[in-house]
Image 1 (cartoon, helix red, strand yellow):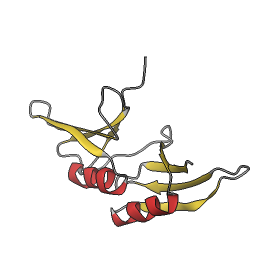
Image 2: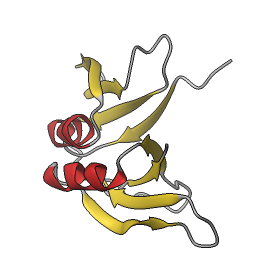
Image 3: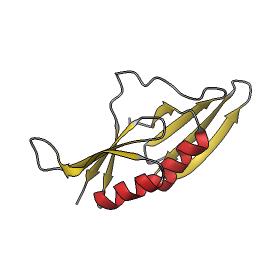
Length: 127
């Protein structure tokens, strides 16, 4: 078994695709409209779904925003250049909510950002 994808609901699909592709360097793997259900799915990631976990963006037509709730934490992304990743995210409309630096009570360098819908993204510097 393996994790296939994580799904999040987004208010503006094109804005979110821009953020995840331009800001985080993901690829749009596939996109499918479902007119009968009035929604569109977009799958993004760093490689083919057959061998990589991806993010499913769900856009319910006519819904512009969602309440995020308190149960969801964040999506973690590894990077070998956390400062460059933060600059790239900001240029794609992301907001850096925690500047890069060592985590509290540890040495791992992390940063946090939010995507256009308010979902938290943790960046973890990997060597």
